[in-house]
Image (cartoon, rainbow, N blue to C red; front, side, top):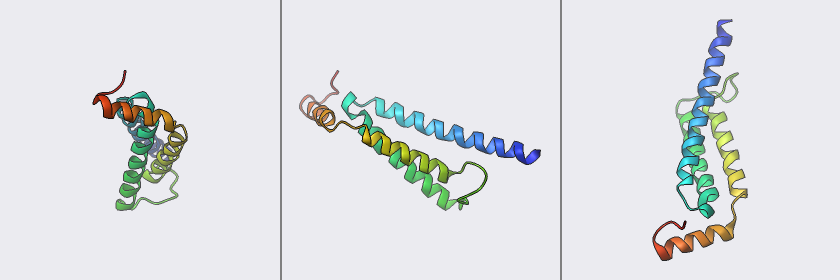
Length: 108
């Protein structure tokens, strides 16, 4: 019974860690103009996935334990990054970038 409680705590901590990373990435990407939200989110999630994988490698976390690990976190972040990349509208991103370059401020 004690192992199940420890496993639940470890999974809860991993889920909270993943949720916080997602929330921070989404919040920072929301500061960009509308056309740049998806590409910015995709880039930030990719960096977060690489950092998670690096931390998992440094701490030598096993790949297949019965709990959530940083490897799992990295795979979820990378999958979400790919989805955000697919949601990117290249024309809207190019327009937002050109508006930023000409005005020097974010478009409203």
